[in-house]
Length: 313
Image (cartoon, rainbow, N blue to C red; front, side, top):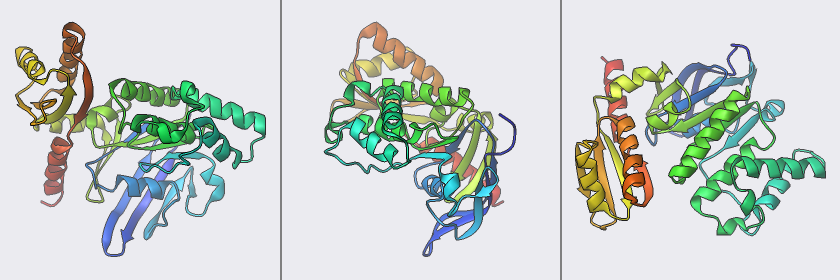
């Protein structure tokens, strides 16, 4: 893999009537894995749609391997895109759904079947291959979208918030899948509003806020800013009161608030890495079942507000 950029964004803008999607984005995306980081509503999905040629720019252009992507059907075949939105034939099985869409690419039946089976195996859905998509959980639906995006091994895999809806194990598996795809010499662009998810896969990021590119480069620079702002972690577990007490015993949380539902809690911490280590320790040593862990994007919003103020001084 050489060092030439895989995607170039030149004065790229998109408006929806009078509403700004992204504004005057200038950036180059190098080979490997790149994280697109920003709070919800930052313009990440709009930018990804522009990169993939699904939206026409209001101004500027997006180039893939040196060629403008808009209306460039040859370039489309080099991309695999997993959107945030679900669009399935609910009555189809997983293997039928992938087979149908892959067959539209012009593969013969044998190749189509092989690609579909391999894709399901990569996202660990092979045991659900013959189950109807309508019966799938949110996490399974997310994985089948990723399976479709990577099924024919595109040069660039574009994933819009692919970790949403996945449990702790599912997130770990998806992160490893993405890292392995990069190790194979291919390219991945992945969006998230959670820094540690991006940081687990790459050091290279683009940061968006309110449709503007706020920063690009090494994720460690962002890490330094984030240490000034606490993370809020939502945890749903079997014994929230006991869990909260154990967090305090390990000095993992600055504060913990029990939710009114009696089944969850919200913890605040400045050191998310240590928090997750202690989280695993509690689960393993005290056998407390966790059904959900999510991180609020409030601290990342605080960083973007800081950057916005700095850019306007």
